[in-house]
Amino acid sequence: MPTSALEFRPATAADVDAAVPLIHSSGPATFDYVFAPREAVQSLHFLAAAFRDGAGEFGWRNHVVGVRDGTVVAAGAAWDAASTFAFMRAATRQILGGYGLLRGAAVIGRGLAVERVIRPPADGELYVAHLGVRPELRGTGIGAALVRHLLARATPDRHRRASLDVALTNPRAQALYERLGFRVVAERAVALGAGQRKVPGHRRMVLEVGA
Image (cartoon, rainbow, N blue to C red; front, top):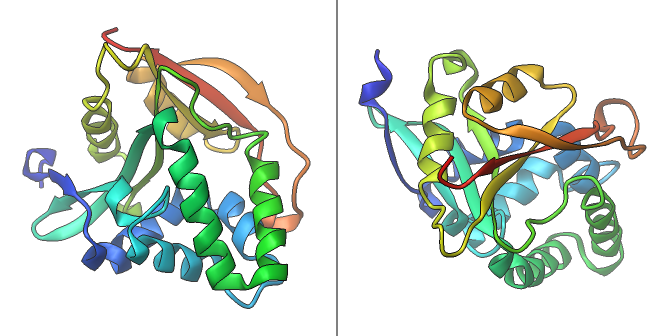
């Protein structure tokens, strides 16, 4: 079916079962490093609880979904530096509520370590993230349509550029972003985690607003 049948709308709490696996697919090793290593509460469970909560980086209010024939087939988010403090406060509450004080402190510590690689947006940036498309529909134009939809949130009076991070292990996604006009401006190696939960290095890519 052509991508013209695709529609985007704000996410709702009822999208949790469809949207959360797509969000997780945007960086499974990184999410699992932060939220799951040797923990009883797995990363998908935490992300689902945070999504239902609604607040913060992982809440449904921060996401859009792509829908085709009534089925959620894509999800993503875009925000800027104005949200940093509120997102930090919401994440702290959600993590401590889900993991308890001691385990929650360890999760927060791992999250702060990841932020040295995948950094929050700077002033004047619209940051695009959590991009996921159903596996069987990748390569059909849905991912590009999702990014374009999110980029439409950029406004010249607030945002000089859009930015995103792409894992070194995901050249297919980098090629997509390059086709959309993004360019690599930094590469950060990393030595976090082990095995399936090892955080890959990432490249920061930017697109000038209006380019």
